[in-house]
Length: 79
Image (cartoon, rainbow, N blue to C red; front, side, top):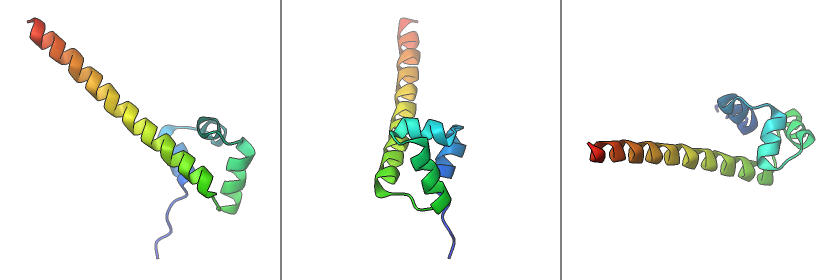
Protein backbone atom coordinates (compact mmCIF):
# COMPACT_ATOMS: atom_id res chain seq x y z
CA UNK A 1 0.00 0.00 0.00
CA UNK A 2 1.38 3.41 -1.00
CA UNK A 3 1.17 6.02 1.73
CA UNK A 4 -0.38 9.29 0.56
CA UNK A 5 1.58 12.46 1.24
CA UNK A 6 0.28 14.65 4.03
CA UNK A 7 -1.93 17.37 2.50
CA UNK A 8 -0.43 20.07 4.72
CA UNK A 9 3.11 19.26 3.58
CA UNK A 10 2.04 19.04 -0.06
CA UNK A 11 0.15 22.34 -0.10
CA UNK A 12 2.90 24.19 1.77
CA UNK A 13 5.48 22.89 -0.69
CA UNK A 14 3.36 23.62 -3.80
CA UNK A 15 2.53 27.18 -2.75
CA UNK A 16 5.76 28.02 -0.94
CA UNK A 17 3.96 28.55 2.37
CA UNK A 18 5.07 27.99 5.92
CA UNK A 19 2.73 26.08 8.22
CA UNK A 20 1.93 29.41 9.89
CA UNK A 21 1.03 31.02 6.56
CA UNK A 22 -1.16 28.09 5.56
CA UNK A 23 -2.89 28.28 8.93
CA UNK A 24 -3.63 31.96 8.36
CA UNK A 25 -4.99 31.23 4.89
CA UNK A 26 -7.36 28.53 6.11
CA UNK A 27 -8.27 30.00 9.50
CA UNK A 28 -6.34 27.62 11.76
CA UNK A 29 -3.70 28.47 14.32
CA UNK A 30 -0.06 27.59 13.80
CA UNK A 31 -0.32 25.21 16.74
CA UNK A 32 -3.30 23.40 15.17
CA UNK A 33 -1.33 22.92 11.96
CA UNK A 34 1.77 21.79 13.88
CA UNK A 35 -0.27 19.35 15.97
CA UNK A 36 -1.75 17.87 12.81
CA UNK A 37 1.75 17.45 11.40
CA UNK A 38 3.25 15.89 14.53
CA UNK A 39 0.44 13.39 14.95
CA UNK A 40 -0.12 13.00 11.20
CA UNK A 41 -3.81 13.21 12.10
CA UNK A 42 -5.54 15.98 10.19
CA UNK A 43 -9.06 16.83 11.32
CA UNK A 44 -11.88 16.77 8.80
CA UNK A 45 -12.37 20.52 9.31
CA UNK A 46 -8.72 21.27 8.56
CA UNK A 47 -8.73 19.00 5.53
CA UNK A 48 -11.90 20.62 4.17
CA UNK A 49 -10.46 24.10 4.75
CA UNK A 50 -7.32 23.17 2.83
CA UNK A 51 -9.38 21.67 0.00
CA UNK A 52 -11.37 24.91 -0.20
CA UNK A 53 -8.10 26.88 -0.25
CA UNK A 54 -6.94 24.74 -3.19
CA UNK A 55 -10.23 25.30 -5.01
CA UNK A 56 -9.95 29.07 -4.55
CA UNK A 57 -6.38 28.99 -5.92
CA UNK A 58 -7.60 26.97 -8.91
CA UNK A 59 -10.41 29.44 -9.59
CA UNK A 60 -8.03 32.40 -9.25
CA UNK A 61 -5.76 30.83 -11.86
CA UNK A 62 -8.72 30.29 -14.21
CA UNK A 63 -9.83 33.89 -13.69
CA UNK A 64 -6.34 35.13 -14.57
CA UNK A 65 -6.47 33.10 -17.80
CA UNK A 66 -9.89 34.49 -18.65
CA UNK A 67 -8.74 38.06 -18.00
CA UNK A 68 -5.65 37.52 -20.15
CA UNK A 69 -7.79 36.13 -22.95
CA UNK A 70 -10.19 39.08 -22.70
CA UNK A 71 -7.32 41.55 -22.95
CA UNK A 72 -5.89 39.71 -25.96
CA UNK A 73 -9.30 39.68 -27.61
CA UNK A 74 -9.76 43.42 -26.99
CA UNK A 75 -6.40 44.08 -28.62
CA UNK A 76 -7.29 41.88 -31.56
CA UNK A 77 -10.66 43.57 -32.07
CA UNK A 78 -9.10 47.06 -31.97
CA UNK A 79 -6.81 46.25 -34.89
